[in-house]
Image (cartoon, rainbow, N blue to C red; front, side):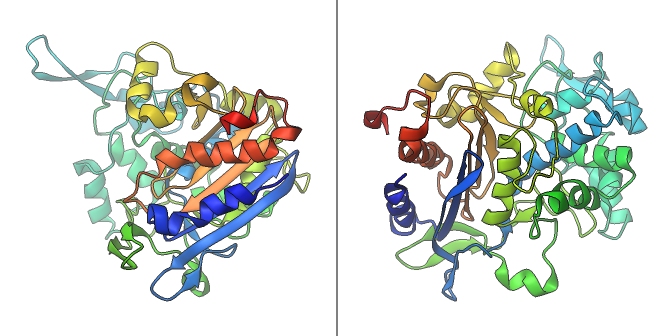
Length: 395
């Protein structure tokens, strides 16, 4: 294996793509085969982006939230077909926004139950949490509304469509964070620590950074310019933080490259970590990476994802590769994962036993355009050891 071309490519990101710093780790056949860092977590102060750098995962949080919900399903605490209202009663009489033949808005009772599976597959119709009922509970709590209180308040807002009928990338996973609390009786972050982070040895992943670790936090850059070393803005959190007591299942976690790759590798190995601690059963991981979108939902996802997700469907919190040719993908059919708003990227390929995690913290650039290139560089480097059709000329 020779990863030198991938390293050169990542080293070019600062000057050629205006990305302040990057990190990337790869596991193959359940062993770490690559880890590389380039650039800075703090350009102004010359702090390198490295293995100890903490950063926002944003939507790469969703895979961890999905794993937590699926753990509870495995343990018989809930099931995918259960209505959410069985655990959070406020969702027992949800309404749906629609329109009459003349185009006027109608708010009517939902015909279908809002199920756990519809939330995991982004077919729940849940809208934004930046709505009046949520703002009210935040204000009443003095800005310290906890996760489950926010999720309960959001039930007052009508759904965007009938559950299970369309795909819309919204706040479904924020609701699932509340579900974990309702089912487990624990705070969401405490549950994740006990059942995912500690078992896998993920010491740097959580919803907050300890006071002594804040100097390790990468700065969040928007429209960084490598020529000047400046950005349009630094430090925005994209509206994720609804208060210090709120733990966002859709995008609230911090992590490091060495931490997150342990989680990705565990999913790649059927739920078994490199320390032989199991977080999910193999069958559950297979279920997670099974496409759930057809008809209107599949069309919705294609419109949402654009060219970067051509050839992919969506499973339980993850994109799923269904057609390699449409994406010029060197990964195997069934590969799954997701990304995050500042550019994090996760790939899990159980068939070829490959796990990739790439991280950056810059959102003014079209980061989704080079995720596929990072993926293909990895597979080209691994090509002699792989069983998929991965000719060098396509790398």
